[in-house]
Structure formats: C-alpha cells, structure tokens
Length: 61
Image 1 (cartoon, rainbow, N blue to C red):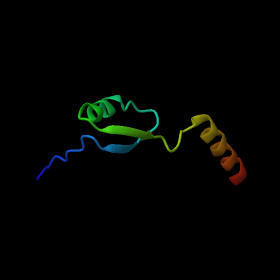
Image 2: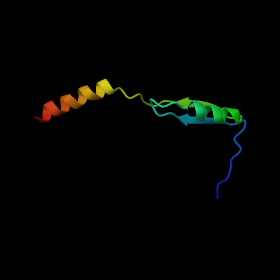
Image 3: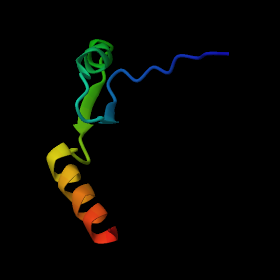
C-alpha cells in the first residue's frame, strides 16, 4: 500500500547525483511546501579518473 507523507513546512535533505537534472524533483518538492537543501557529496572528474587508470595499468605492466 502506498501512503503519502505530508512534509509541507518541513526541511528535506536531498543528495544529488552528479551530471543529472534534478530540477523536476526539486520543483515538485518545493511546490508541495517542502524546503529542500541539496547536497552534492562528490563530483566525478572523468579526466582525473582516466589519468589514474592509465597510471595503474602502467604500474601493473
């Protein structure tokens, strides 16, 4: 059974996923009266990851 929790007037913490558009979700929450604090705990850096992968391969070889 799906229930709806009334969070109007409450503050929510929302963990974001990098490189995604969260505007629809945040907009829906704020439209219902929730205050939303977003947190982006990390940022993915593909260039840094690529360099680390190449270094690891070179070290294994």
